[in-house]
View 1 (cartoon, rainbow, N blue to C red):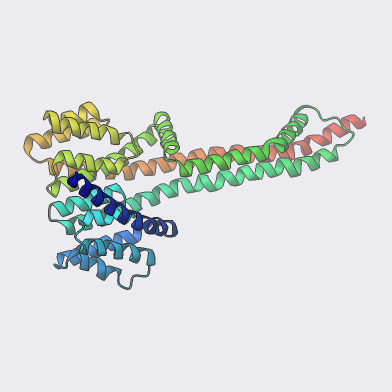
View 2: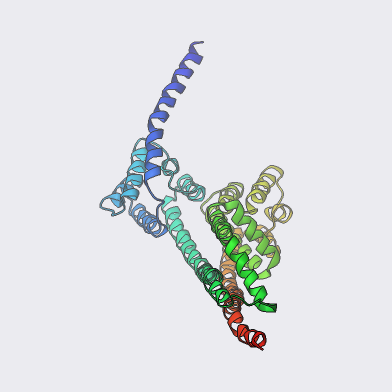
Amino acid sequence: MSESTLESGAVAVGSNKVLKEKPKSTLFAAKTKPLKKKELVQMFRSLASMLRAQISTADAIKYYAHGHPNKDMVASLHHICSDINKGVPVHTAFKRSERFDDMTIGLIQAGGDTGQLDTAFAELGKRIKNEIHFRKKIRKLIMMPCIVIPILIGAFIVSQIKIVPQVETMMVGMEPKGLVKLSFEISHLVQKIWPLVVLILVGSAITVWKSSPVRNTIINLAMARFRVVKSMVMSLRQMTLLSTIRLLYSNGINLAKSLRVGANSVKTTPFYDELRKAADVYEKSGVPLSSAFAKYTSVDPQVVHMLAIGERSASLDTQLQMLSDMFEEDAEQLMDDFSQFISLVVMIIAVLLIAAVFLGTFMPIFMMGPQMMQEAM
């Protein structure tokens, strides 16, 4: 009874501490914005250089926070520094700040466990920089259709609800025939449904922007339809996964744990569950890593082949590096190909919308003259 009472008291004390701290963290998270990727690159690079200069982790974080212009980052780093000074592990302190994803926390933990935290911070800086690079390229790919297509759709709607009705009023007393009649009917339909259509389009855009499952569904459909999309997405995913596993494994983390932590880098993709399954099978049954990948994941056959070579020749680290570099080069080339594909699609859509605007607006005017002459005769 006494032991259970003591345990209950300890839990109650711990709960009170959590309850006291939780509102602060919730309030803090509600008022602050996510840390910018560029600032994270600079931070991790600076922390790595200070750790190499034999400065303690807590002091390095404190020195970096001092005088930094971003108040949100300063507040987060002060919390992290305070936790580390209290004896909290570095990765736990970073996790408590709620500013870093599972992948970052996993790499920091790996660096702390192997005594190579400076290397982990340096690699995080490189990793985030590469992520920024690829995100910029992807943003450029989707920016043009996201700007051009809504503008053309807006022009079509305006022409149907403003210009075509004016043309129709000019034909009062005349019965429209053929294509002119069809044009007016389309205009009447657009006038009735355009608010609903706009709401649906805006709602769909917001849903895609906010919902990861919806984005993944769209990506999967695009991958099933277009080979260039599938190749590009698979290259990006495998590049991210293999570079993470290599980083962990080269820092002394066993392969099973490297797979589990690496899976967090592709958490929103089908790779995540596949990798967790492969890691369990590899760890519990003792099958080769290449066999686990071949049976339980959907990676390219080239990955399985090179992993098998790495296991047989004890050069797995080298093979992982080679594969991550190879997929990075492939991703660059495939993005260029995808850019050309997107440009072609946008051009086709633009031509169709411009034709719709032109025909809907000017076709009744062109055809109204002959009809007026016929009726006058």
